[in-house]
Length: 231
Image (cartoon, rainbow, N blue to C red; front, top):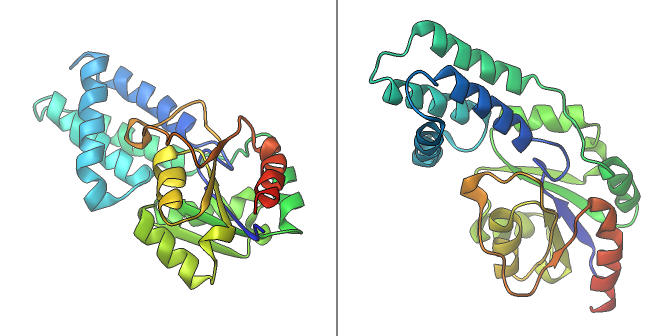
C-alpha cells in the first residue's frame, strides 16, 4: 500500500518555467544589439550550467548568469543601466504571484486526508519558502524539504529522515531528471506530470518502464488506485 506522496513544487504545483521563459525573451531583446538570439541562449545556458555548483538553482543564480552572459557577449561593454535592468527583472520574478496549476488545490486537499503528503522541491531557500507560504498549500503537507539537488542520495536521506519505506512512496513531478529517474533508483514509485516548458538542463530520456505518466494532476488519484492494486 502507498502511504506517502511527495510533490515537486515548481511547474508541478505552480507555474515557474514560463516566468523564466518570459524573462529570457526580455533578456534577448535587451542584448539584441550585441548578439543573435541563438548565441545569447547558448551562452546563457552555458553560464547557468557552469554556475550551478556556485549559486545553485533558482532566480538569483539565473540573474547572476544573465549578468555574466551580458558581460561576455558585449566584451565587457554592457551598460550599467542594462545591469540595473537585469536586476530589476530578477526582483520582478521573485515578487511574481504564485499561480497554481489547474486542479492542484483540489487534488492536494483531497489527498491530504488519505496520505501523508511531503513537498520536496529544489532551489533557493528564501524563494521557495516564500512561494510555499504564498501558495496556500503549506498546511496540507506533513513536511517540506527544500534541497539543493534531487539525486538518489538526496532522496535516500529525505526518506530515511521521515521514516518512509521507498516501496510505499510516490514522487509526483514534472521533471524526468529530478522527479522520476532518481526515485526509481532508490526503489520508489514516480508519476511524471509534464509541464509545457522544460528547462534544457532538466531534459532527460524517460525510462522504458517503471513509472507512470499523466497529462494533468487531476488524473493522479486514478494512478494511485492502480499502484495500490498492484501492491
